[in-house]
Image (tube, rainbow, N blue to C red; front, side, top):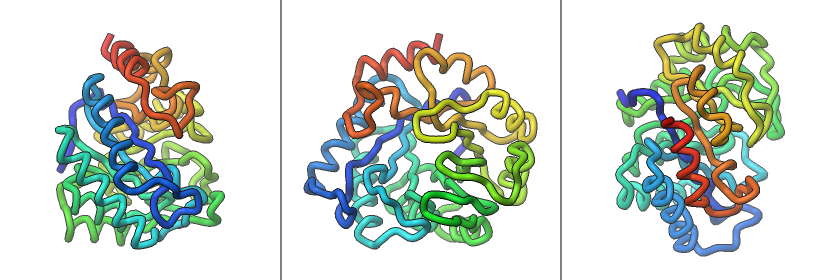
Length: 260
């Protein structure tokens, strides 16, 4: 099972709108070029891993991507893996764990991120219910070495089944069989509550705990005092604009701050 040593610094690759999405304009070849440019910047800056998600496809389907989206993501992921020698993660927004696993297997990715793995959350896509039983069984058949990193109290959502984040982490890790737990702020780019991060780490000390939003060069050192790693995207881009390419200077500054 994939389990990197901490601190695990993951750079996010926000894909532009993919074929089939309402805002799609670019040819797939241009999307691949965009993703490879970001991947190379992150690799050269010194990140330990990459995560790719269909961020530009909003509004998102709740839990089942269209086949064209899955195919496009698999092509982009395979291109990244062929060029950049870093572990790659897949997040199929909003919550299509089966497609994320399929893309990961096809492209040779190392882990997937699942926003709602256990329990029920109220989201802007409606109610989303975790399918840990199906996901873990599918992972066992398709790619048993692929790690599952699952959010608790995920951003852009309100948990309905377990309001205590530490207990939610226990259930996700031990009943849901997730190898890693992701803690976020309320929305993309907003900071996670470090007290909540510490409570999660105390609840699941044998699991990797990642902060999945709001990390910056100014805050990453403090975050890593509580967590095993970070997933960062917005703060590596000019003015935090997710539709922009990653800025090499910002990526390098982030790594310097994290390694100091």
